[in-house]
Image (cartoon, rainbow, N blue to C red):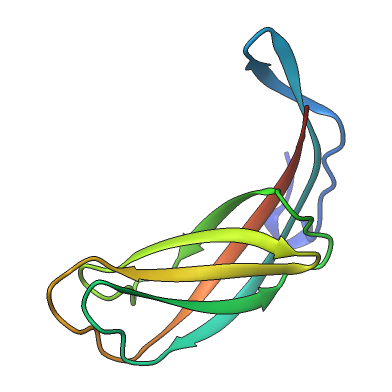
Length: 115
């Protein structure tokens, strides 16, 4: 039984998650960070990128985003690591309307997976 108050960090190394085709997939690293991102007005059918620091993130990591409750209606979000230590969080506006200014707290989790 683990007290949540005492749980601060965890390291996962070489976790075997399943198979990719006939090859066993191994999670080699998992890191995360919490950040507050501010997006300006986003026109219809447009995207907007904001970056956040995620120490230990590597190019081509798998990225999972945890979004707060202030997500604009109709907006979509995706994340990717194109620069070491940085996750780009992309706001996608596929609607026919302009999205207003949005500030939200984001949890970005990156995972290194081999092969």
